[in-house]
Length: 355
Ligand code: KG4
Ligand code: ZN
Image 1 (cartoon, rainbow, N blue to C red):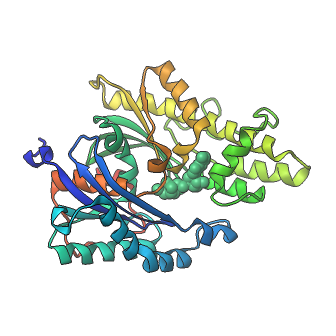
Image 2: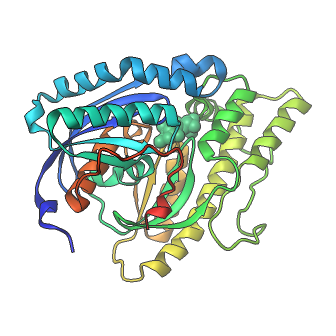
Image 3: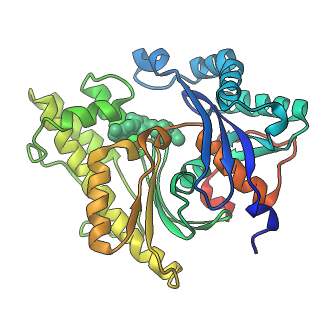
């Protein structure tokens, strides 16, 4: 039963520091959404990590520590609210790079204690998962394709505490595959947007790259993914002969699209079994890779064929941000109340374990 407090509008300060974005935001609203973003500040550290082709944890946690207070101040200023208007302070408590998570969660505890407001410890993946509720008020249940730099999962989402895992990657996450392919092609970090840009100018049929675990060559009946074989095939290809970078990007992206659409179609059947009564069928795509227009277009085609409604949040809310953390905190606070100040940060925190 939804509690009465779910009808009440909350104003939440959100803090996100689990990877290389230092972010703070203020959200207002109530479940099921949409919510109102009063401010959404994201300070990217991408420039600091670019020379290394990936996020360096020590650099990340030091940068979070240096700039987080200022980012929070800006978020509160832009939202034009006073401390009294805040109903709670939400922070990512995991999963992620532990140093960064500690900085964000500890800061949130300090702010919550200082204001005498509840702390809400948010699972970063839940933030991504609920973004379509923040933006368009998508009702439960929905099928979720979560595609980011650290995660690649298909889940049935029946409610705040009901996540059912249909498939996940057995090796690399899809964003990680984009980043690794970009690195071996000498492109800038983060690689996803660079690969997408060049892919638009290349021939997706130039190279026949493997599509691991897609139906037909897949003995697994679940919706698991695999990307490391694809990444290795790209490496061998570029080592063997001079190639047009645009064609490699286009062929790689075409293989990723084939894998994502095939696995999502498999997960649709699992979702329909789990939620047979569900009148509206929704596919929600979340995580940084959802910012890729070609992937979104392919998923839109799949949804049209399967009679699903597709929800893809705008790119700025697909990549890491604190608005999604504030929103998840808002829903959690309304449903379950806040968390104790003794809550510990977690490097690992699978969504499906929330069941
Ligand atoms: O969700 P996110 O911001 O951070 C994580 O929690 O991982 O996702 C970042 C990932 C990176 O791997 C980045 O290369 C990828 O999302 N990404 C993209 C695009 N924009 C970001 N991948 C493909 N195409 C894009 N346009
Ligand atoms: Zn993320």
